[in-house]
Image (tube, rainbow, N blue to C red; front, side, top):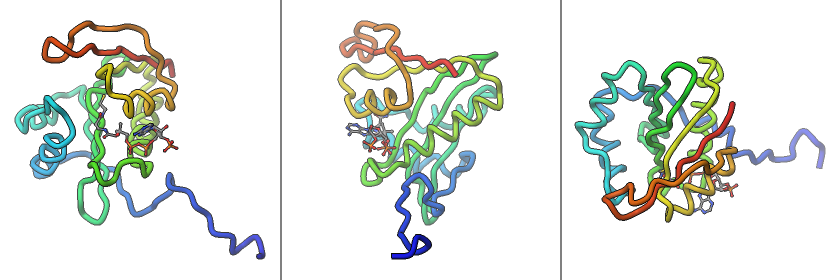
Length: 159
Ligand SMILES: CC(C)(COP(=O)(O)OP(=O)(O)OC[C@H]1O[C@@H](n2cnc3c(N)ncnc32)[C@H](O)[C@@H]1OP(=O)(O)O)[C@@H](O)C(=O)NCCC(=O)NCCS
């Protein structure tokens, strides 16, 4: 087969997915995804508040006009904190989370962020693997952080 017609399979370059800032009318769809994704979901109000916070950066991944994922992170001085990254269940393991993560990493580099932090439920294996893939390392443990029962692993990455 001539080189020019070898099919190129690269999930990361799926051009049908757009990433853009979250708008107020996106929040109800986001809150629905959130409810199905976490034992203690963020409320619609909490998401709406994120839109008012100056140091909060809130983006959605959109495919065919549908919100399929979102990421929220705070940037203060030269540090970043990922506060939420979620992909709608049926779109998981298709590279969408990675697209969102790369997007915020690019923004973080542009903002001269030096270190990124996050917390992940100790039992959340998929998310832990996901963060490890992006170079986050465990730096601490917050005992009984979630609902006074589940531990939170604190992870960080130097940019
Ligand atoms: C964590 C999450 C955002 C990942 O999004 P995603 O779109 O499924 O991730 P990707 O397809 O880009 O996966 C990238 C890599 O992460 C790791 N990963 C993702 N899901 C995984 C799973 N279920 N098991 C093991 N590794 C996994 C793999 O290394 C994967 O690379 P690979 O597919 O080449 O093996 C998604 O699972 C999710 O929304 N989970 C529920 C919400 C949540 O727990 N968010 C994190 C809160 S701290």
